[in-house]
Length: 304
Length: 279
Image (cartoon, rainbow over all chains, first blue to last red; front, side):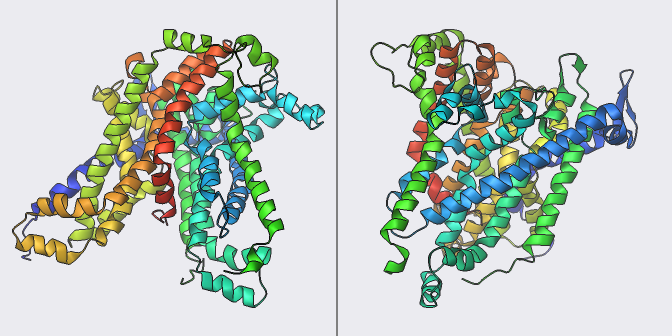
């Protein structure tokens, strides 16, 4: 290898990917952050520094919406962490049981909701939960719980949790598959060694398997976090851009869409939209950093 | 393998739990599909009954086919998905080959730079992407979507494919070099065929989010002639909210192609996910 000679084939191999990635992803990302520092006054784009962020966080009209969306987004994430991931882990634990019949069939069936689009999932559940059609109340009636029925999507206090659960229903397949894959890599000898010491069944899961799959649970948590803080489609499909009733299902994605694109009487404001995108970027970055430096490095990796 | 881990009671409980969850997962899809073939009256009177000779009706499908341009939407989605996958795989594999095959200054840095996008969603940059597409006149064209999805898919593709490219035998490549093959020929004729399974995994991973995306079609290509199936059904269903036959039929028409594809590719998909490509 001679120094100072450009090996053109390396450039040719790298150029398309780097160009498209830089031009369509990295550059717009930073450009959006830059746009957040400007404002449009009398058709002119004027540099205003951190003014947009001050409006977003402290101006009562904006900040109320922002904190509402942020709070809702955290609740959305918490529901996923508390419901989706434990169910996913439990299903994976059952599926990975040796000599379980029909495992492949169950696995494929449970993964079906994950491949459907938000539009299908959103409308399907909207119809099922609708009091007009009456499937949900009828089914509750069959088990004698009809009194529990409420138009969940239309009530401020339930709508967000209901949508979070619909999203859980849709995405349970992902933690299930990833944990299932992790469980398959645990060598049989370790489990047999546990059995000799009398650790079987549930105890084997808690004491042997769970510690071994913790890194995968960490990956799932961060994937859930990034996915939730950038969610939009399900809420938009079921509740529209206004994220009703009375903004109770508004999350950062819908808030950004509304702000940047405008709706009904409010005109779109790309600069405030960029400011919200900047806030989302910061939140996701903090989450990813906590995971990379706080969790992943401390997690013990077992040699298997 | 011993008996302690498989007594009959446990097995029954396990099947019970799995069947219960499978029912939860499939029930909504099932309800939508069966009701799409019923008359309006039957939809409301007995929503859980299968269509019979009396309640069978295709009125919903007729409305959908008459009113919505679903074939056009389907074609748009198809073009966007296939073209994006093609570019993700081609560009991704080329970059992965460069990163794993050659030592050059800034190799690690370039790898890290390309990996940044795995964790950071491209949606954050939407405002500037739209501005750029408007400035270049690409707004309301399928190219806008193809470019965005290619950029979105590249980071993970490069990451996964370079892992696999590293495993391609050096002896093979050096033998090719001795035989006078150019670096391009080595990539296309030797390396690429050997990482085909990994490429299939990357393709399947990218296919579902691209096909199902609502955000970018809504913002970058909302015009009638470039609507994707996801956006098209969203708009269509929004207009027909009170026509239950049409809504249920439109939903079914959106579900069925995905289900067929899933039945064909589910093995590949599940093998891809469980083969540890994302570990």
